[in-house]
Image (cartoon, rainbow, N blue to C red):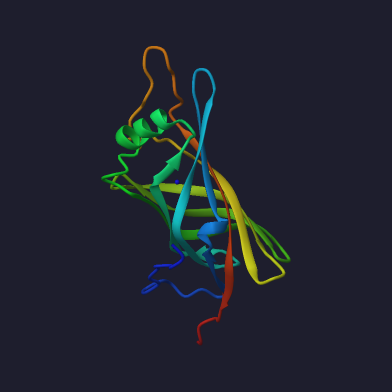
Length: 192
């Protein structure tokens, strides 16, 4: 819903008091999805191209984005994958799915652990949709960061094709889960 270079512009982003930037390592980041269907659930995964998030550990404004390669989506069934790329994700025309961050709501903070809600939007098929993503994050001893979470995507309501037919019934939402690791850099507070 997930290339080592990170392309993020923070120009014009609000100043953050206790700021950090997490730069995700695509090789250590996984985005998976599950869609319920008549006989079983369909499970799959995406790869990310890049990802970076600038945030304040106390919450407030956030900036950054995670770029998912829509063309990398796989479920383990070639025919289903071809149908998904051609008719649902339209991945030839829309090769990227982009999560953009707006703000961070901290629910709990203890030592090197943080839980909360990331508010932002997901751009898919050329349209942006608001999202709120539950997450858990941790600063690891080696100076890296670990983040994981999940959220629901009402893909049919967002304009993606409903693949249900007379025999096959497919859920109208998909559960997206993610887990990633990357470099966590403290950002100095702006001088007043």
